[in-house]
Figure 1 (cartoon, rainbow, N blue to C red):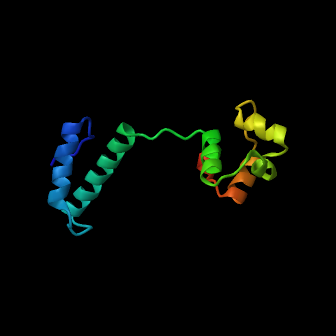
Figure 2: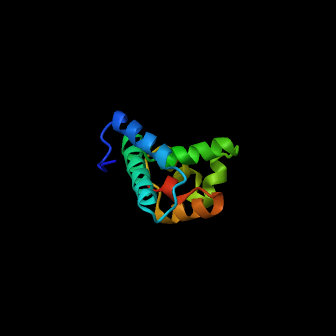
Figure 3: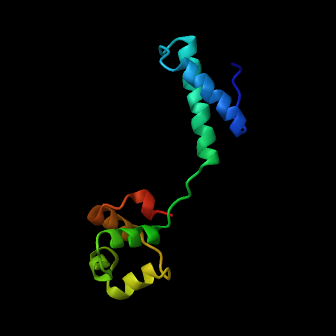
Length: 116
């Protein structure tokens, strides 16, 4: 198979068919190398075509609150006094780096969810 970037779903289907043919091929062989390259091409195409947008940090916090039955008061140790919590959740104030660190450490919210 001639290797080239995947541009559309029809090309994707051809590559997937070839991957099925090569599946189980020993690594380090020409066919094994072809399989590795084809899988990288599929991964790149799918990452571009079906990209998942970054989550909004405030929505991530609200989701965590809902899932764990947390109140705004429960966020005070991580964000600050009630007024500050309201400003952050209302979108009037951005999270600061210290807030992000405390939320990550205390509530186990992944950094990638908190950094926009």
